[in-house]
Length: 89
Image (cartoon, rainbow, N blue to C red; front, side, top):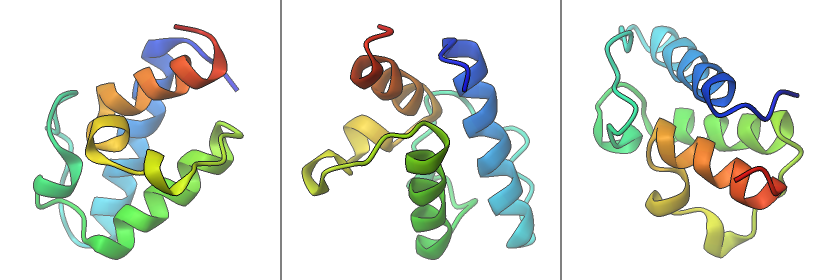
């Protein structure tokens, strides 16, 4: 696991693109600050899959109150949250 911010962002972006592709969407142009649930690229099931992947990928069990737009809403937010929780930022 790489706790480099750019590496985290790249991994999250790749997962969002993968999930969108499985739904027949091309999320290749998703921006770092785009709100993932509002982007239209993924549905609610894909959002859940993203959160489960994120927890496993970064060994980061999430509390219910941590699962929100501020922490997980965008690629930048997800990278920042990992670094904050893991002491890397």
